[in-house]
Length: 238
Image (cartoon, rainbow, N blue to C red; front, side, top):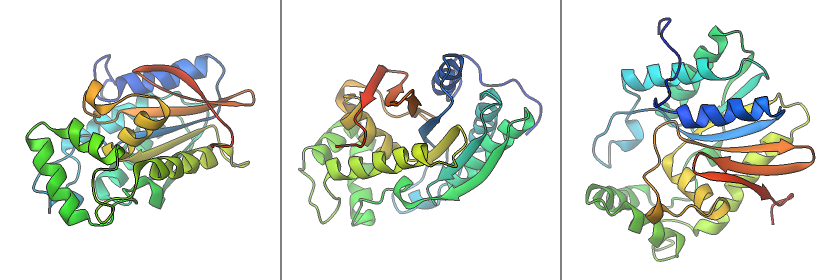
């Protein structure tokens, strides 16, 4: 990955990194970002867990890191799936090239789809609906409890657990200012549905390197993304 231009105005992750930079300019020095991994290969439902980043995806993640403010320091976390680990490493590499200080990636379970009970069967269902452009209905069925719990757990408790993990990272006494968590599109849909009121049927599919940002300002916690105004979160989460 060479000395290429940083994230362009319309590049992958550009809207997310703009919010991070804007928050820093506004005096926010502690934040956590839940992000989808960068651009990846595609295959069958059975192959999905093994699909890694494309070369373009690696470069986009690297450029994202170069576009981050060099201060405060950042900790990196990810799902154990390799494309998430690759994304984290590439962002960190880009961040370090501009003088940033980082703590290298740590895998944490809630950044994976921890609520899925039968990934092969659910994956087949999801791939079929996404292929037929019925993905909003798939997520609506999950959020409304239509899909069998044998396949996937209830969405609301899953969202609460995921948000709790993110807030815990933000509140750790020894944490540096920034925390970047590389995860999956399903987890972004969860948080956007339950804490930003952004419904899948009313918005586009989660983009690569799209993120939701949670930050602390004074003694309050807020959540935002490029599609919404900042929303005050209860603390602790109800």
